[in-house]
Amino acid sequence: MEDSDELLWVVANILDAAGFHVEAALSGGEALEEWGRHPETALVILNYRLPDMSGLSVLRRLRERGYTRPVIAISGFGTREVKEGFLSKGAFAFLEKPFDMHVLIGQCRMALNGQPGVKTEAVNQA
Image (cartoon, rainbow, N blue to C red; front, side, top):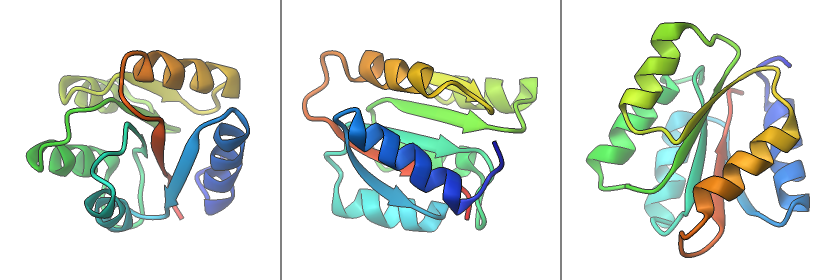
C-alpha cells in the first residue's frame, strides 16, 4: 500500500464498517486540532510519514498534552529506528505496510479492551 489520502479513506471506511466511530485527519496538525476538539478519543492511529510532521512528533505532542490512551502506529518505512521510536513513546502496536486489515481491526479491539468509548482517530499522509 502507498501513503496517500486514498489509503486513509480505505482504512477509515473499513474501521467504520467494523463498528468503530472514525474521525480522519490528513496531517499531523489537523490530527492535533481534531484531538483538541475531542480529547475523549479512545484510540489514535498514526502514520509515520505525514505532510507536515512525523507521526512520532504527533505522538510526542499528544503525550505532552496529556493523552494517555492507546496509539497504533503504521508505516511503509518500518525501520527498526522508527518502530522503536513509536514503541518507546508508548505506542500500543506498530504495523508495517502493507498490513492485513483484519490485523489492524484486531489490534484496535485489543487496544480498546477495557477503555471507555470507541471513538477512533485515523491519521494518514495526504
